[in-house]
Amino acid sequence: MGASELQKALARFLAPGAKLGEPYLLSREESHHLREVLRLKEGAAVKLLDLQGREFLGRVEKLGREVLVRPEELLRAATPPDFEVSALIPLLKKENLAFLVEKATELGITRIIPYSSSRTIVKPKKNLREKLERRALQSLKQCGRLWPLEIFDPLSLEEAAQIEAELKVVAYEGEKKTPLKPLFENFSGKSLLLASGPEGGFSQEEIDLLKEKGFLRASLGPLILRAETAAFYLMCTAHLFFFAKS
Image 1: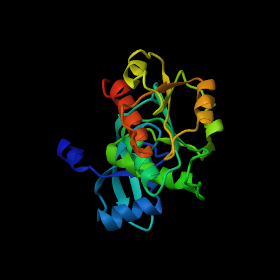
Image 2: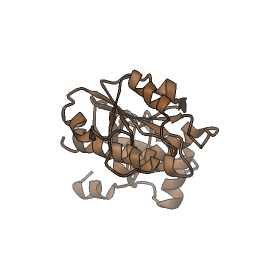
Image 3: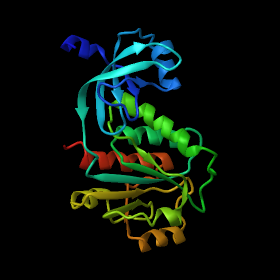
């Protein structure tokens, strides 16, 4: 395939477990998108993501309810990230949680752990993790990420707080003395756990619990941020310090 054809092969499709040179049947959802939305024809060049760190240049071999493609050339490969950023995010209203999952994928976050606490308004819905995973995978296709975002089933705050990391930081509006920047500037480890509060904030008992579990409290500035804004702020700042420089 020539360079000009490579430039045209912009559409990415999820092909979990695809192998170079072997025919692969896309899922019905991916097949529908290829066939009915993009209206690609047999012989069209596509990009295939195996969700194990590889992106292939492939070709459409046969259209059908499940489209047959064949990976023909390895375009990119990446080992699993050696720096991990996990985010504890409260269960939020409407599309806010899905939006944060989408942005976490784009920002290189390793895993999202939704949690409930005493002031969490939203209750976990059935199949929440599966719905969020679908949103994350669509974002992965758009941004070209090679390893998928890991998403947990919702946990209680007490359960989530026990997750291990070399640095654990919680954004807390009651913290006035410790800005976020020096905590990140002085960190040279490989795993970071971020936490932000729900709409009603953390109770004093919950802040005490997080401190007991090793979280350092950090200020996000003089204003009180919405729950989704605080979570997004933390992820963007982590991206700036640990990913954007590389």
